[in-house]
Image (cartoon, rainbow, N blue to C red; front, side, top):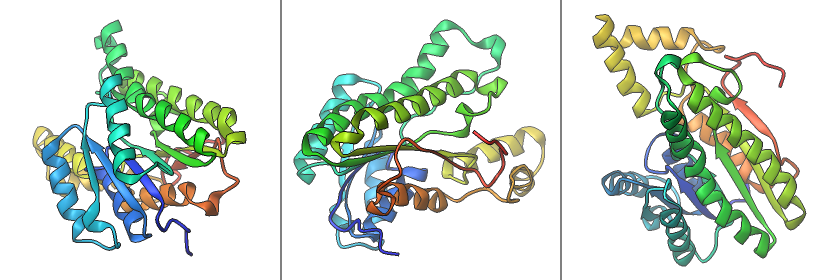
Length: 266
């Protein structure tokens, strides 16, 4: 299927690693032009080198922007840099930011605020200037990569889950608010995905429990509905579809990409 993404200008936050990087590679394969944002200049350099070895006529021309998106001014500058390099932003994918997990009895008001800054405002600080630009140009698509923690409360992930739930509401609300101006907004909720970060976590868990990484991975796979963790590319495929003209009447949706691990109706 041709997703009709050729020459689309795409901004991806958190685009230097994991699902964000897989999204960047996917858009490039489809012939889109891509800008990626990350706090780490080192990670951006590695990501650009990796993408340059892949498919796509613009693979060697990826725009890299270093910014701390929890800072409002820095996020605005990142958007401006991407627009200056690409000419405009047709598609925004947000994938930057994650809240630390804490047991409930360790949470404090400051930690709740930190979680909102890390996960919610790192998204909103980019979404707000971009959605307004898209409204002015009369078109655009936004896909927010959120997480199943906002659908099902986990005692170890309450603050981060609350940020995820807020992002889902913001996605649906912005879709309704800007739909008549040609902007679609959707959210994707992956469950545990076999990224580099998750692999590192498994290595730590294996050392703590005195088992092997393979055993830790087997346990993680067994907890999923399909019997295996998602790959970043599988999540990226869902993101690309929602961002594409092929999903032209899908807006305000929250799509679970968790392999039926969380069997929920809503």
